[in-house]
Image 1 (cartoon, rainbow, N blue to C red):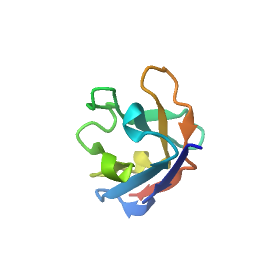
Image 2: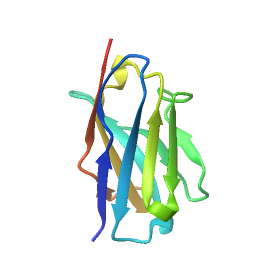
Image 3: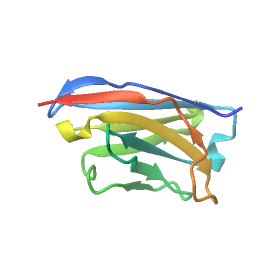
Image 4: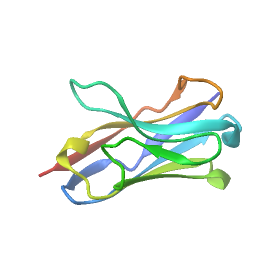
Length: 118
């Protein structure tokens, strides 16, 4: 059974940093593509960063240059380093996984809240 468990959220002031972690289990980690999504109240879910099949990273324009996605295959863990946080980054953050050949993510974590105050 695939499980994704996020951690690392919290409350920070604008300009601060947080690192989110997503511990994965129940599947062969290297065979899956993973990403970080976020959803703020009243807004649509946004994919903020993801890793594609060749291992390279992609970012939403809203976080480019501030967020870094990475993964530790040995630990089956996905990370999102968030720097220079802004109030508009406030959201529930989710990690997600899919087989790389699929278009939709079909495994999701429970989410971790990030709140950035001005």
